[in-house]
Image (cartoon, rainbow, N blue to C red; front, top):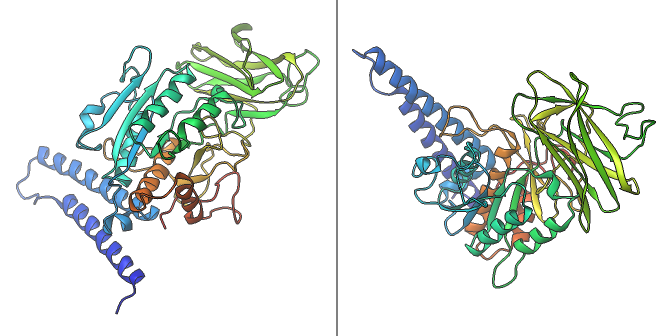
Length: 438
């Protein structure tokens, strides 16, 4: 007589081999006898699709999800909200890479759900759907410069019954850089069990800014500006192209800093931003359109208060002097959110994947392997953006099997079942380990 564990392993392998068999059969396709050049091209397309299907099956097996699918657990009874800014063309994927039906709501001022020419949110949703194909999906976007609209989107998802949420968009200036501030407080209340709602679990990408982030204490140099290193008051900023560059600084209450970006090619000021104070944090954000081929420099000056520690992040550009430590960005830096970083197929942290610590709770919490083989496009989905929805999909499977579990229990099980990758226990690069379903 087989033990329960043996039967479980057998059913998983049979399911996995069946997927491989279907993929290989699709790859072989019909006989090439008498086929025209056009038909051969069609077969190459079929072969690519079969390869993607096989790669996805292998990826799901690595997370432990294929075994759960074979046992009949596929996310039924759980709603998952994808919070993102890029849903252009989402209806075209309904019934394909997405479920046949999706509930969508915009929290932008203009009410536009497809304002940005981006499919980023669709790719995140595809990952969740691959792991939890029977889960219901909700889509929501928000006003980029208004944190209140982000919290409103979270509340809406809760009101719709979402137990799981995933966000792969970072907004550094919504936080003090250490998991605190008024937006985190509001987010904690929005996710908590209250008002007849059970607690929800929010996952977020740790961020791809480990190599574009600086954190440390303010050190005034001779010119009155912060020195990134002894004698260096300019931090070189290199735009990646013609896309708009954003430089964001955040810190706790007690100090405020002004940020200036200089064009090194023309020796002129490209942008300047004055600090904005809140009750428990200070933030400074500036944006500018770079000139083709130009390089820039970031300068920080204490505007008021007592100097302390701060975080600075460069988006859509490279930063010359950086620190990976503490680079996890909002919303993942908050203790109420599960931060998910990225590792490669060998379990090594991706060089760009943000590191902790950032809050009273260890960060990141988990990591997931990237790239994720999608079916909606030829290029696999990578970055920590692809990591967060994998953890969210795993949570949906856990919750669909144990609908009476609390959010904290689901979080704890994911941490304890994760495959430890670094030093024993939690570490600031790979958290508790790689997402793996027990």
